[in-house]
Image (cartoon, rainbow, N blue to C red; front, side):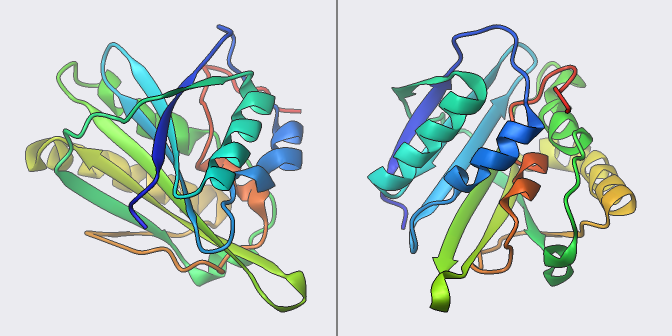
Length: 211
């Protein structure tokens, strides 16, 4: 499953905003073909933020192209992210999450990616991996696992309390429950509604465009 292709997202406009209605219409494009995996990755430091996409199949990569082009007018450049992260916290969903109706919680992604703003020496990687399965009668199921990675255990320990607070706020304000684990895998048929991904895969802005 690890063989695939990485590309960096290149933005062609300065004003990056997320149109939630358009996201709802196009969010299915984030899902890979059955049996494959798509990923979204944000690497953040005090001075820069870079975004990458990855897929184990060309079809999955083309779907990601379509999504980020239509949402953000993005272009793409073949480029692998730097491999400097050795400490990881994995975030997995609970079975009860599939019953939660539409919600938009901009805080989670924005604050997770802003950890590097707190300390000029820190660099973080926020990653989301998705898998999908189409069952009998064409019923689609998918799931994702997120991870927050640091260059060393000391950086990870320094921000463990911040991560816990963001997970707590997500649960208290929306009901969505996330568990933290040292490692995890994606079961591929837990979720149904792809609009929920707006809370975990998004290019954050100072003021997201909400309709």
